Every structure is written in structure tokens, then in C-alpha cells.
Length: 287
Image 1 (cartoon, helix red, strand yellow):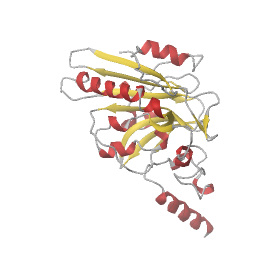
Image 2 (tube, helix red, strand yellow):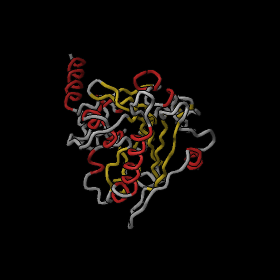
Image 3 (spheres, one colour):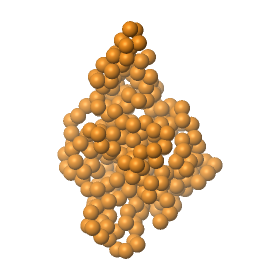
Image 4 (cartoon, helix red, strand yellow):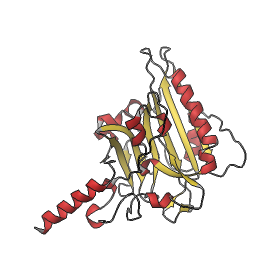
């Protein structure tokens, strides 16, 4: 009887959580509809974290196929120690304007639901991820910074799916609304103009990530990344012609207007290599 009651209480708790019930997997390739968010189905290679599609420390890093309203929307590699994503990967197919007012969500599969009966998105009982309370009233001018931007989503449901805190990092407000936002707008415009195959449909692979700082935290729980990066790659309408590029930005207060300059994938790999040692760093496979 007690086992039945525990089971029912768990189901009740899940029913009260926002519907971000995604799919935590051992490999992204386990779910074809999730694998498609990576170019040619090939995941990034980050030494010590994700190598040849395999997580190196499965207690710390979790692969999340972000499911919302029964459709896989994007993929996230999540660091449960720093309580921020390492990256989110998504397919850009065009965008719609507007921003939903849905509540923020957390990922129940990252938690021990039975032993955390008071866990919800608003408090810190979520031990393996950030909660909304970590970001509210933080007195550090830190925004909830999207890795998969809401402004890149093709429809309302896809926009709403980005409002999971597993897709969010603490981002300095002036950086988020300044050079980073300007870069996102420029990249989006370029993808719309250039990433069209012969069928004239927009399609580009994008991966956006965060580099954790050594000891800078939000409310002593959530790592404030030192840098953010993004990389994109797509096939154009011209036969066998591809375009690719990247951006790198420091997560710091911007007192004046700044502009992020584009860099090559090779340059991005050099920068990431400084943080992920002893191996090959690569976001996209060679084409």
C-alpha cells in the first residue's frame, strides 16, 4: 500500500510541474528525431565531456532531447554540477516574431523525484539544475540567457520550448541585450538569406554553448559562464557550396556599444581548446 501511495505522490508531483518532460538519453543517436539537430548526425567533440557521441562523466553531464508537446525541438548537453548547459543544438528553419509569456520550466528527469517532494521550478529543491529562484532578484544584473534563442524558433510551440532552464545560462544583461543580441540578429538574417537548398527551404545547423567560469556563481549555485559561443553551418542553393562561421563573446558588462566580429570555425576550435584540453575540439564534422 505504501508503495502505491509513493507512486501516486510521484505522479502528482510530475503533474504539477511545467510540461518540459523531455527525454534524458545516454546518446543523442538513441533518438533519431533528436540526432537530426546535429549536422550529419554527428555531435560536437569536447574533450573530457563528450567524445565520439559518448559522455565521459555520465553522473555529471546529461544529454537531453528537448521534447515539448510531443515533438523534439532541440538537443542540450547539460552540466548538473555547474547547473548550466554546455551547449544546445538546433535546426534553424526560419522564425516568427513575438515572445511567449509561458512560465519557466525545469527537467524532472534530472532529479530524484521521490526524495524531493517539494521540488518545483520556483525553488532551490532542484539539486541538479537551476531553479527560477536562482535568477530572480539576483542583484547581479544577470539575465536568463537562452542558448537556443526564442527569436530563432519557427512557431509558438517551439518558442515556448526554449523556456526551460536547462537551455539557460546567467548572462550579463548589457551583454545579452547588447553585442550578443546584435550578433543573433545578424546571424539570423544571414541564415534566412543564404541557407536555402534547391527546394528553397531554409535549413541550417546551429550549436550555441557556454564556457563555465572557474569560481563565479549566481547565488552560490549556478555557474556564471565566462564566455558564450555560437557556430552555424548550412548548404546553400549552389551545388556543393556550404557556408559556416562562428562568434565568441565575453560574458561581461558592456559600458559602450560593442560589436562581435565573426570568426572561422578553426578559430573557434582554438579558443575552445584553451578550455577543453587533451583532445580534438570540433563542433561540426568536415564537409
